[in-house]
Length: 71
Image 1 (cartoon, rainbow, N blue to C red):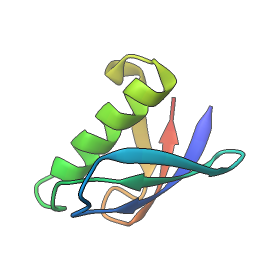
Image 2 (tube, rainbow, N blue to C red; image 1 turned 90 degrees about the vertical axis):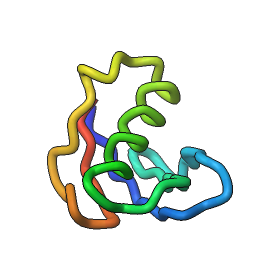
Image 3 (tube, one colour; image 1 turned 120 degrees about the horizontal axis):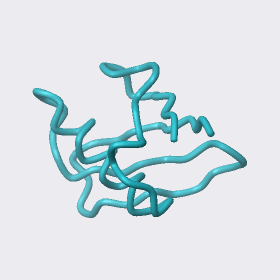
């Protein structure tokens, strides 16, 4: 399954908000440097979908605010 995630950083709490089928908004508490935001996003998606982190990868948008994530 592939989902599209719009990421915003420096939020007060970490959460994944469903917008429509296959589209989500992620609020992350970390700043986007040295892959910290991507790591927190993968952890968040892993918990939300109850899937191991090893089965989640960012297919497009590693440096963008809009990402395509494969589960």
